[in-house]
Length: 76
Image (cartoon, rainbow, N blue to C red; front, side):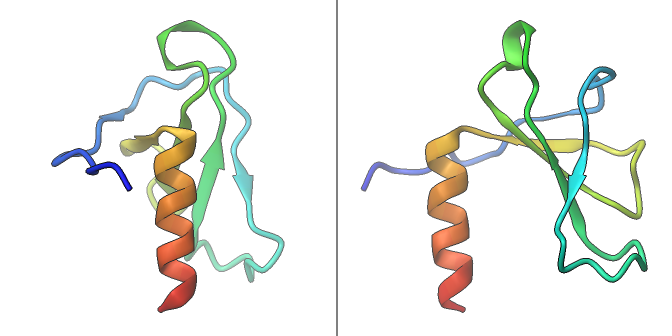
């Protein structure tokens, strides 16, 4: 497995993305939302944000990093 970056880039500049929420969400705004920027320098990355703070920053993950993260989180 390759080493993960020491910091995760983030941005608040994602005006043209469609945010998705898990079907397991209760609607209480206590989950994360994801989006896939389709164009520009962020294309191909996965953006993840806190649904309680939609104007706040979104963390940006490569597909490989997100797969690794979710695999580890599912083991907890």
